[in-house]
Length: 561
Image (cartoon, rainbow, N blue to C red; front, top):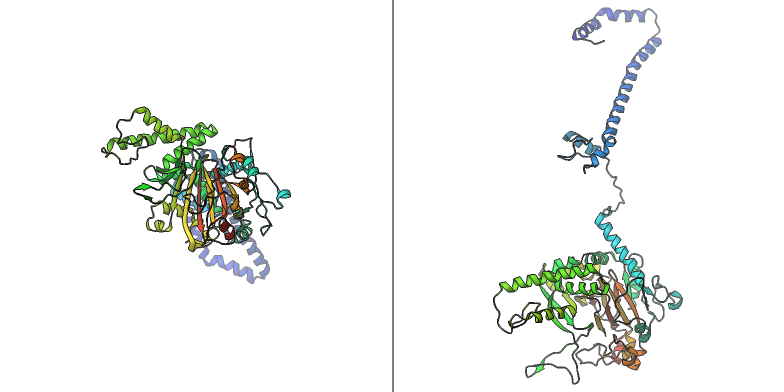
């Protein structure tokens, strides 16, 4: 029954009157048991408590039903509109079950459970994004392709050790080696394209060490000055994936305006040489009977080099997508060049121009000559070079040197935590030398008088290696020759057994194919012949000299002092 204000007032008055209190006193004084009175009072006081409990239970049930309907009753209408199921977006789906007023939003935000923070939780741990998952899938695909194309010819039963699980210390006669006739006869350096289901059997004797699980073993081999390959170094892998997965990444960095020193050759063979000075104003022609190698140096933008490298890959693999990329780069380059040439003033005769078609000073050139010159460019092979040094990197943060050191912290002697394994002697650091190669390019066999660490950050390269104790069999040019420290033997000869010196046939070598993310440690004086199996990015750093093999080099007429 509903109560009005008069009823409440009446009850207050009657409750305060003396008549209401007198019977109670009389009942107590008339002999009524005090214990029974207490029990009756307890029963009366428990009745409203039970009612309150039932009311709370009903309210809680109603609240749970409302929450359930809000979050699960119309989930599809909320999520189908592209909105978060916990929030209603401004101007979002009108049929969404979550109200859009600020109070409801705040309530739901507060209600949403938070992920518990554990004391030992890794702060760097995160759920990978779709892009990261895609990159991971690409890396797995490349790894599977690599393993399917290049397979070690010999296993533990022949080598005496497992190249993927090498002993803690280098075994005797490590690394295994075979004659040049066996290795180069099995795989001619001119053959640079392998397409599945075909595969190559590699005369591999070098150990492979996982940076994450076999670091200590790799360190033992490095201290013993033995060559090996390090893989799964996360800081190397990070850069390799960035450069490998997006060919335009480096293009965006280096652009189409700045030119870099680039080696050029009408064929695949590149031989280092140095001709200093000259007499009577004439260039140095070298010693009597000397024939300068076919390769020379030009200035070229990264964009143009990328264009030619993509085209070589496209032709070899018959890949239309690569060919189209190269075509678009070429069209853009020529278009920008034409605009540049139309806007600039006529230059004096004899001044070198940036025009890739030809020299602007000769205005009598015919159209077909310009086309022929462009075709010559497309037939040539190019070896892009980029040398970085700490001084340039520190003084000019926008320089290519600064970019290389930022991208390759594992070669930066000032970042010892990142580079202590690869840069053994930071005081003898000599910069970072990058060589970007295209399919087919070969670098003549030679040795360097310092330890060398070589990282492949994109593509694939084949290295044929030889111990310094094979020096007398390498057919080296003598000291003072323009191509000092290099072999006079053409390792790419189509008929090697006929043209090679007799002792060179007995020289013992081994080989390894490196792909993106691999790092080759090469001790002082070790010989290496390089074959570029695709468009690739390689950077190396030197750090100090060791003398354990000096006696072998001295037998070849070289002094390491």
